[in-house]
Length: 329
Image 1 (cartoon, one colour):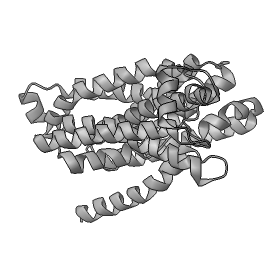
Image 2 (cartoon, rainbow, N blue to C red):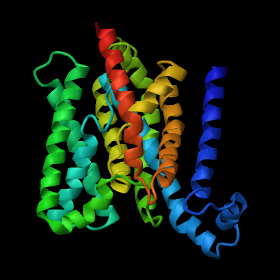
Image 3 (cartoon, rainbow, N blue to C red):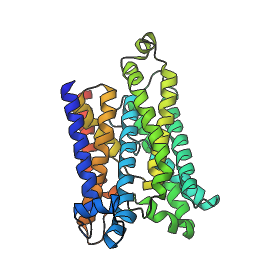
């Protein structure tokens, strides 16, 4: 127990350090004293403008979106008992993206509230569709079926979204920036819109940790311990929808965060979902903000955070797939 608390406290300190670096580093490095003065003192001058209108919104969005993506990945892996599951692989991000494209193209959605609503609706419908495809015709939950269903459904939805975007130039102009996946927002408005949704999802994820531990021992034993598997599954789907919908609406589709961090948390904390989710909530923002900071310096302009996380996540996915396959043999 002491070791787990020590790891969690170290992760909190690391998160604070990376958040501070996100405010300090960029095209122009700003001293930490100036950052603190801009946040809590004199907010005038060009440095304060950079901090308050650019770096503070993207840092807060990185904290929220990172926690949301990591927690949703931990929930999906626990629910499907599949170590390769995460929102991007299961097509949830693609579903949220398609819903946003449909909203912009056919329903005149052009506000942050509209983006959030459409992304949440798309995430919910995609999650339900993947779970239905994974369960259909099966007598028990097969983790591989969920991955195959998610990849197939996600590919179809991404293709449809691309087709609609190419056929509607106005939609292309609206979606091209969002679809790349970035934390580079220019105001606090997107953060303020998604914050209540993501915070609600995080609270639900923490609440679900204990019943998910019971379900991991088998549904029969979980029922004997007082858990209700159907309710847990339904509430988990709702939670995944809130987390993925909120994160995707504000930051765009960002993959692999929900795949990597739950594995690291499980390796450090063991199989207890309470500790896995708790550590994931701190390490996932660390990864996302680190990728964002790295992207600021990799090219003369700026490399989108989704591209950096893909470079980090793709090798991780290959390693996990080979390890999982080897274990199955």
